[in-house]
Amino acid sequence: MAQLQEVSAKEDAVPVTLAFGDGIGPEIMRASLKVLLAAGANISIEPIDIGERAYLAGNTAGIEPRAWDSLRRTKVFYKAPITTPQGGGFKSLNVTVRKSLGLFANVRPCAAYAPFVATKHPAMDVVIVRENEEDLYAGIEHRQTDEVYQCLKLISRPGCEKIVRYAFEYAKTQDRKKVTCFTKDNIMKLTDGLFHKVFDEIAAEYPEIENEHWIVDIGAAKLADTPEVFDVLVMPNLYGDVLSDIAAQIAGSVGLAPSANIGEHCAMFEAIHGSAPRRAGQDVANPSGLLLAGVMMMVHIGQREVAERVHNAWLKAIEDGIHTYDIFKDGISAQKVGTMAFTDAVIARLGEKPTSLQPVSYNTNAKPFVVPQATKRPRAKKVLVGIDVFVHSNGDVEQLATDMQKAANHLYELSMITNRGVKVWPDGLPETFCTDHWRCRYLAKPEKQFNKAMIVELLKNLASDGVDFIKTEHLFTFDGEAGYSLGQGQ
Ligand code: NAD
Image 1 (cartoon, rainbow, N blue to C red):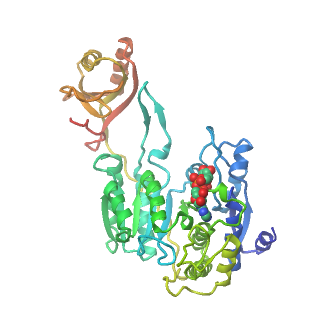
Image 2: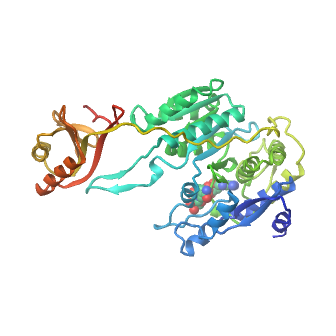
Image 3: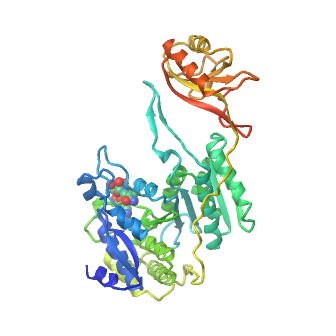
């Protein structure tokens, strides 16, 4: 491409790895690049092949192996949407790239552009900062019995510290007033509890920024109903995945929303929508999400003036009613345009600012903030106090309790049996529905210490008694605090 050669000729150009993607990807990427270059973006482009072609060439992760060299060299990835082929065996490229490059923060600004883009929430202007690497997305799943499957939810203190501090630093540098945390720590007291606890600790370091915590269910309801009361939102991976799409949609359209994936070493910028294959090759797709992701990329690489010029020209085009089909509304829009006509309309407005919508200003003197790192903490005093043994059994709970007690020796005792977390022994309720998956908790007797040799002994006894144990979890205290939850009803 002539344009690409032209930019790569500049000596001080910032190298950017770029993927044209699938479906509408190539059209909206060409459009976005055209605007960025017209605004003076000083970048040199290294195209890589990802997505459908890479998948079908046998790379199950959807990325050709040598693309990693480019990504690790440039550390900046501008990515158009890709198509994930139907059927099993194909891994999500996004998850692979995010996790492989340590892109722990997913940042999604969701703003309304009322009255020019229809929305029920004209004052909405929220930024969702989603943790991007942990939670249920560790992808560690097992089938354990005939009836029960498990997905591990992993939350780490360094993961929480990095994302929460990122949210506060983002708020500070972007002049945002409040950071809100969503978790479900009334139920998941250890995992979401840690996220909330770290939020409270770090919030205290930013007294100038208001902070609050909501339980995610009622918080999500409030976000869908009254988004204007929120500013920056920070949350674990799964909640952030779901709520950022909802937030983008209620702001106006998923077609307008950009996303940045930021790590300590690398960053990736993309639209939040997919490759919309049915719209491909027709010059109708809205390039706005990818273009605004390009604006975030320009800020990231320090070309703030370019970012500001592009963003303001884009706002002006939206305000002038130059709309692609997805946001076009009779009575509001002035002209329905295709991808390239919209692109040219933005380019024609470079240097202009919107007059009704709020112009943006990417303070050219602002320092890009340093991506936060987790603090190293001393190791806690960890004491083994018991073990949960999970058993596959179709039998009666009283019989199971008898079998499990038999395997215990005088050093520890069976303290409870739960089924899907609910205590069913001792003193269970006959109404509780039970599956074939039981958790049997052994605790060290008072004054005794559990040790790993005792666990081996216990499991040997269970094996020789024919108990079908399928996994164990050690119970520890950390500096005297229990590192495990109680059974429901315990
Ligand atoms: P999609 O977001 O691609 O499209 C859904 C619908 O939204 C489209 O049919 C279209 O009507 C509209 N739309 C989306 N983007 C638009 C735009 N820029 N302009 C105008 N209209 C637009 O979702 P999908 O159909 O569920 O997924 C299609 C493919 O995209 C799948 O293979 C999926 O795996 C992939 N996908 C990729 C990414 C990514 O690369 N980041 C994200 C989501 C989905």
